[in-house]
Length: 288
Image 1 (cartoon, rainbow, N blue to C red):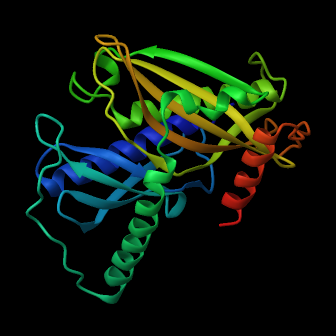
Image 2 (image 1 turned 45 degrees about the vertical axis):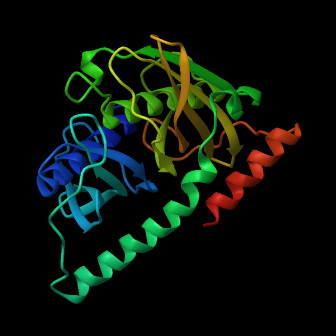
């Protein structure tokens, strides 16, 4: 449809944040969590988009990073997250550099980053689950995908790139959103779906070369033109067949016509206690 794919934008943002963190931390840095990503406007074929990332705060081993995408002077996507400096064994490594604010604007930015950090730490343990607790499997509208991790999905031939994983998650969520709207095949001048928000992503375990990745997506909420999807990611170590939960995230998609105008989506009414609970959780998250 001539628009930049939401998954590609997520990859650009995650990679930019990683590069900024590596430059400041003087070593490899990996994405540990991603706060709400807001897609304010899309980017079309032929647009020039600039990706900007800056480190706002440095802890012992972690860095609070703000990312954004600009089209000219207009801010079209914003995101913030935490990156952790790691050693060759992917264990947290101390960061010697510290940041001191030089003016009120920088001081406000740091205070905001610290408030996000505090809220995030309160959510991390609450969101971690086991592989058997995947709630998407009990939703009426769900879709799964399984990926073998080869070298092209990794940073350096050892661990999966967070940007590549986010793109794969968005691909799965977008496919489910299209299917829910009855859009199974691409045709010129047809409706589509666009990513408008991603929230509450916490990475609990690294995915390594040779692992098998299982991704499960399910629809939890449907509004007039938008849909919320819960996406869970697990990894399986083929050496011992051990399954570990990697991350959980909420993706929001909007149905649009070929010109980018919002369109109504089919109605969805939660029926089971499980669907009703996730529906209420989506409403609560949207009101934040």
